Image (cartoon, rainbow, N blue to C red; front, side, top):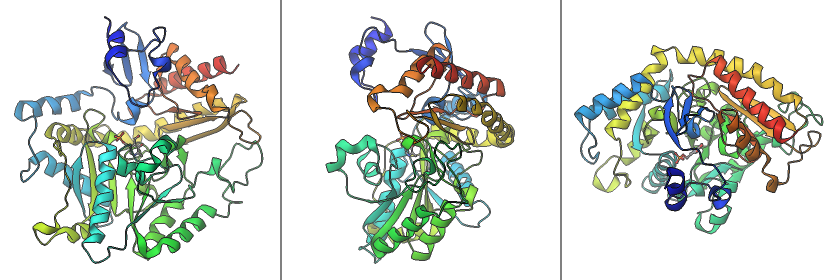
Length: 456
Ligand SMILES: Cc1ncc(COP(=O)(O)O)c(C=O)c1O
């Protein structure tokens, strides 16, 4: 049996319907090598990793600096429990992440390590809950989140989200209140003229998103434990990008009311938007901050929930007050070594300066998508590009879901050497940060070609 046949016989992939995947005619790329922004399949075909291996890869595949850090770590240690023990790499990483989270603010954050984005969120939600339960405000038992938000697939993470991916699990979720997402292109109050290319028309905007947020905070007020948000970009919703100023207002409104807020920077953190954190773009400081995906450079599962020191203070005072949560691979030393090397590379290779230039180049290249009549919106933040396909640009009418147009475009893009995965009818390009201008031009060209082939 070939690897492909074995896969179809024995493996179950995430978010993968059995058709066309199990169809013998459907070719499943078997990836056997990665380097920089490229992946190779077993037939030797080279692809651009156009979604950074589901948004995890930072400096490129097998960056020698990160590989060396992992090798050196393996010569010392593989794994050790973090229950009542510690190791220097977790300690150093926690201090480094605290500094990143605090910026110049003088705040201090404490790191609780886990493995994935969803586990970082689970920990954050449970920390917020337990904090109020044991510190005299047990009535704070509600969570708020944005419409179409996504924070991972475990039950707690699903419960503090409103994702279309989770409708079937509705009865399994604990309820949370949903707030109008500040997603301009799909905003019901959008006043941009029909067919306009600029969905973010601040001049005409009356900031209904902030008003409804304020109303929700007032309505739920003293009952709210925490509000959970993906700052700046709601990734799984379809790369919905928030207007400048929203996060600053959210930070202010929550702080005024003593409501904790949890920033889910699982996708946006560690350089994806051109800075360490999306929150930093608006000078906002969350009470809890979740990191995963790029934290280890995309090399190993590693996540961190960073918590303001004042909240940690609510867990001191003896055995009965400890945070009752943990995972076997908490603070895995190999992951921590990969993360330390990943973070160091940002300075060593002047990555923020380079990505600023790359983002500018990507912005210029992406204007070409507007030539296509079924492109409704082209939006970008840092090295995140989203191209939303619509049946009619004039009224933003979507294609019937069963046509799966964006999925088909991405299937065609594969033949042009690009691997990426759409979200609904949104095409995305999220390259590793090491992608050169030439790589970006190649990726945009491949996607554009595939788009015209699918929708001539
Ligand atoms: C914003 C956000 N939060 C959480 C998650 C869940 O992360 P993981 O898949 O590592 O559990 C994702 C995954 O895409 C995400 O985009």
